[in-house]
Length: 282
Image 1 (cartoon, rainbow, N blue to C red):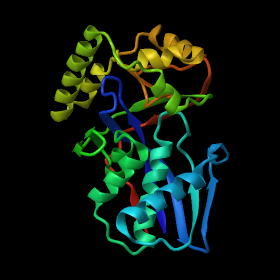
Image 2 (image 1 turned 45 degrees about the vertical axis):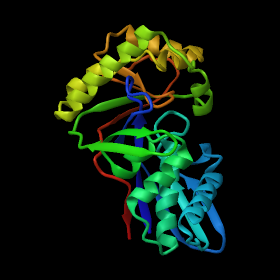
Image 3 (image 1 turned 90 degrees about the vertical axis):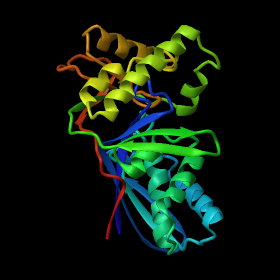
Image 4 (image 1 turned 90 degrees about the horizontal axis):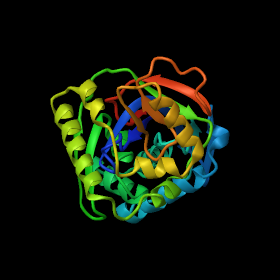
């Protein structure tokens, strides 16, 4: 059997830890019965994934703990087209795939709502893993116990992600964010996010992207790495209508037309939002 697992872009600027969206970039995961757990990563970024076994093992263990169902041995081949540690949901995609595989291989019929809760517990926050599993754009709330979310269909719209040639650690980037921020910065984000969500609720996605400026997390993350600062300076000098750091970075979404001579660039990914969730193909 095979899974198609979408990449995601989280935060989307002002939507820090709240907004995430599936995009048309995906990993393909094949799985079948085997003796024990075997995980192989192939594809463009297969050699860059060094913790795949641990991610799948941890997800399987949590699934068994929560459902009481046992997972027999399984062989997994993950074709990795989502660049890891770039803020495009590579980890969330692996976690989501693991839980869907666990549900199939254990013979369980765990409702999607329960799988979502397990996934969020594993990831620690919902803004990547929910859109990965549900598709579309998802606005979420999670306080460690209670999970709430609202899913929106997103229209076809061109998006461009600049993928730098260096990785950033999600944990390190989160540590860069201060525990308190100036009142004026918090207020600015509330205003911007309110306008973003109002446009999303009316299906005006193009307009919503104009309200992704942020003062809560991006300035602090960008300041931790001179390469990120260099890329952002390059982007801002060309006056885009919008730009935002995808997840914790290093990928950046922006609406420029030309990307020649951008520093530290590995790839330009031109894609669209995806309303398709993680899909199992028999």
